[in-house]
Amino acid sequence: MSSVAITDIGSLVTNDSTLGDGALGLRSNAAIVVVDGKIAWIGDSDKVADTDSVVSVSGKTVIPGFVDSHAHLVFAGDRSEEFSARMNGESYSAGGIKTTVAATRAASDETLRANTASLVSELHRSGVTTFESKSGYALDVANETRTLQIAKEFTDETTFLGAHVVPAEFANRSDDYVELVVGEMLQAAKSHAKWIDVFCDRGAFDVDQARAILRAGVAAGLQPRIHANQLADIGAAKLAVELDCASADHLTHLRDEDVEMLAASNTVATLLPGAEFSTRSSYPDASRLFAAGAMVAIATDCNPGSSFTTSMAFCMAVAVRDMGFSPEQALLAATVGGAKALRRGDIGALSVGMRADFVVLNAPSYIHLSYRPGVDLVDSTWVAGKTVYQR
Image (tube, rainbow, N blue to C red; front, side, top):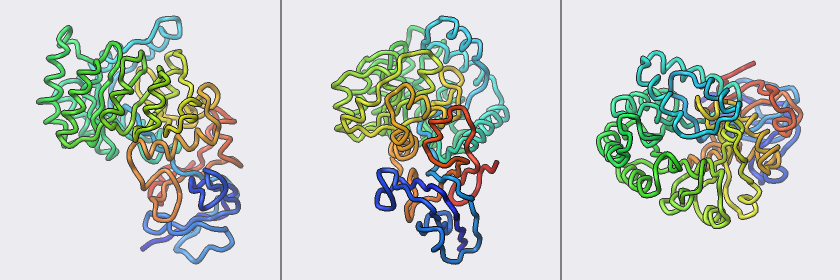
């Protein structure tokens, strides 16, 4: 049994209202004790019992680790020219994914593994302690399976997204591709994935196709989540609630009835500020979701086409500036919200018995994450009581 005390915390965010003030459970002059990778004690810094080691953070802020519940980390190639074209006035569509598919299919395992490791390192540097990663940039049986195997080397939160778009070889035969996804591809991929996802939107898969894909995944033992309402409202949010998806992601276009349905469901509304920022799309208004009582998450949507960022703090700042979040709501969405979007109860907060995932910020308050956009405030990132990043 090993123990470590983190002391002299100027401001501690626990996300546990029983441990401190407000929804964030804020404490000052605090300390936490970690035993075997879990939180064993939280209290005043001058009341810490003896531990094997002590780390003073010298008045800095400590927050729960960010939980990134939507990311696409295994891919090859570059789409910076596409981004430049959008910034010069071209509109975003799902078709650009096919560019990444060609590069990913051609890449070696070593290239894909190295690219993924680099992005994971960036996530840790930005304070992300748990992250999901999807397939979806291969779109054939062998390569979807291969990319999931690589993703699983880095996270247990792997998602089969064979239904990202219809690949070029199935042009005008989307139903035939759906048959491949729910048949041979799913059978090959299922042992490497926890989740199944589908891009249900204009230019991708319609509601009937998405329903068939997600039901097949559930029958194969995977849990459902969905890309919904990014480009248009074609009924994907309603489908998410119908199938009890853990998360409906994007939600750029929401009707009032969608908001009410989500609020009355177990489906987390996951908003992806980087996607709207990088595609110059209209931002969803999160205040409608909060007012209705929906659970909301923020994720990076790290991907090479529409949101090539690993910075949760950046996404939080955009959410506060343009999407109707308060700084407190943004932090909760990036921690507790992300945990709920992954249906995890052991992460997203700092209370006794939870995994000791936390971030030390070189700032006097969590508010600085939104107050100082673009500034790297992460001093260190800890997963299960061990540092994975130290400035």
